[in-house]
Image (cartoon, rainbow, N blue to C red; front, side, top):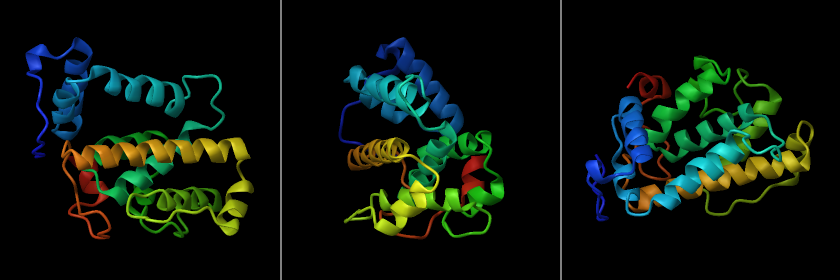
Length: 200
């Protein structure tokens, strides 16, 4: 379990929406500690939930141009690469619901796997570029060419924006010790496979 230095708001003092989110997170991942900490500043977590997830990630805004299935793919690639247990517990079933097979989820580390289409492989490569452990991300002409064969520049920007918010969020919750890590940043090995995460 995480052991943050930040104070936790007692559950009974949390706003009602935070109590619901905490219960939901405990049911899925066995961990809702971050909601107790963000009880100190509810507006920040609500921005993340409603402005990012509601409007951008889940296409709640009509201005979003990218199908959510591609956001689910890059989100899972990032959470598995970054090693966030709570994120994976939520993201594995979400990716399955978006149509990705368990075989694809298990092969997520191998972005060149024949289980993925060339379009999926390009999105996975972009996800690797935005991972926390990558100290010098740069969109190469080769990767841009692969992406632009399937996506408009607006869609590529939206993919990158989603990846940036997700990796930045992960860095925040890791830095403040708000969630359980599956492995140290930069360590390719994991303590659990995606399938095992799905079952927890």
